[in-house]
Image (cartoon, rainbow over all chains, first blue to last red; front, side):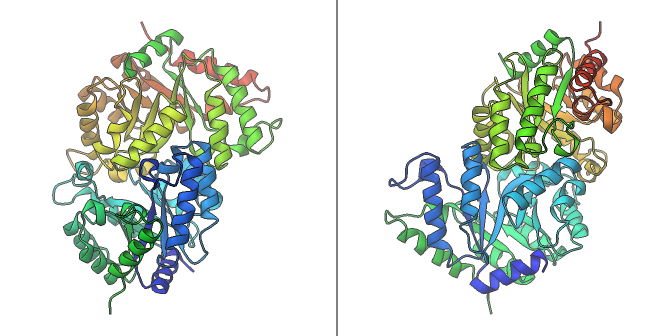
Length: 264
Length: 264
């Protein structure tokens, strides 16, 4: 089964486009967790236990593990092993290199760390993406329109035919096996709708709702039109208001599962 | 002292723009090394011992360490500790993320792993670069024109004002502290010369000579014009012709040190 079919299946099973983003910022951990690598491991373990009933996918942000050096990679490997098989694992690594190196990154992330899909940066072109999509079971989400303001500096370059449409065109041409998706920020609803219309077959991974202020309804609509997609929430679920951990996390996960539910 | 000054000093000391690229492909190791993480560590240790006399810089390609999971990050940390203080350490990581995550990547790579500079992918704009250049002692090399053929798919986008010039413009504007450089492939000599002329103050990290066939003289010229820069050779030094290890590595390092020497 190809990656996009697996994604559709996982989304249907939980009846939601939710993706829980695991960005364990040590400064924000609840008091009961130590601000070291063991504390981060214990926090993430409890987050997974509290949210696995509600989410079809987790997105692990590698920056928050690499900050701990090799020990961060070690707990990442251990945490991945705790995730039930029917939940998709997105490795938010923003990788991208020339062919040989990209092949090693692909093996590192999808074979060693067992991620189902990886976020990729497209600056080096299709050669850098291909090693991640050789196996139809594994997929990628290529950065297209990102949620941060300075994303526009390059992504809008090119006048009437901005770079993000060129990126989307390349992604569509690479999607021969049904395993290429794109990262589309919810903070740019016009581009989200434009790219959805022009490229109807590619699933989106949508960050930027919640803390970053993106529009929830637009995000749900573009997933709905494709039949699949993931809407990521990190801080809104990991660090919600209120002191009762993990009850407040469970409540937040339930809330976003509902907000992002499949319509009709 | 800012990063570009440190770079100039290291280059002068070894009288060469050489950068030895540490890409330890396990399939290519000499027979005496086991094809596992210990073998890779031992190989790299001998490479450093054999070449440190001749090179002002090492570029560690993280893909070839991440393939071993957390153990790869561990040996990378151990290898970095073996490099003499007067040799610059480039972390070839091609990172780039939104602000918060990029800050964590910067800390992971420059504080934990103690790299002096990091290669970055600019798709997310200046926000993704800034955390790497807050400290003037630390630097970055931002992908501008890359050595691989498919690099042109995005980098040439934009007609008369191609994306790579936009990238260079952003890098120049960010270079307030003297610590921003760019990756410029030797396989694209016209762009190398064009960007050097338009942006005379930014040092280049130049891959693509040797195995990839880029022009050596052009690479040396553009470093010479700026007074600093690094020309990377990986396979040509790690895996040269001949069976006598490490004598053949020493001979290759000497050869490239001479080929890339400061002129006049």
